[in-house]
Length: 132
Image 1 (tube, rainbow, N blue to C red):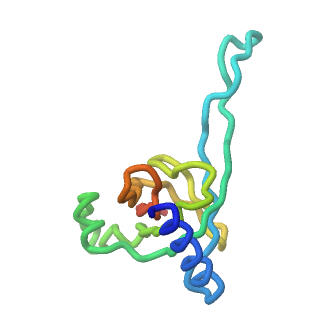
Image 2: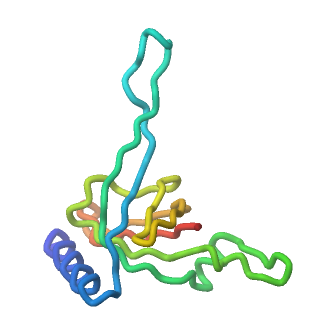
C-alpha cells in the first residue's frame, strides 16, 4: 500500500511542479571515498541526487522545534524553509547536514528530515527543514 502511496505522492508533486508550486531540488552529501595509501587517508567524495519538493516558509512549529530567537528585533526563522519531498524514486534518503540547491541557485543545509512511512518500509514523503 505504501509504495502505491509514494508513487501517488510523487505524481501529485510533479503536477504541483508543472503548475509552479513545487520544484526540482538538488541534494549533495559528502561521503568518505576510497582509501589512498599515498596520503594515508580517504578523500571525501560528493554524491549528488535530485528530488521534487514543495518549498514552504518556516512554520511556528518549526521555529519552536529548532528553538529560534529574535536577534536585533528580527526573527531568525526567515532563513528556514520547510520541504515536503517526494520519496519515491530518490536515490538517497535526505538527512541532516546535506546541502540543498534550489532552482534559483541558493543553497541551504538540512537541519532535520523525517520520513512519513506508515508501513515502516516505504517512505511516502520526507518532511525536512533547511536553513539558508
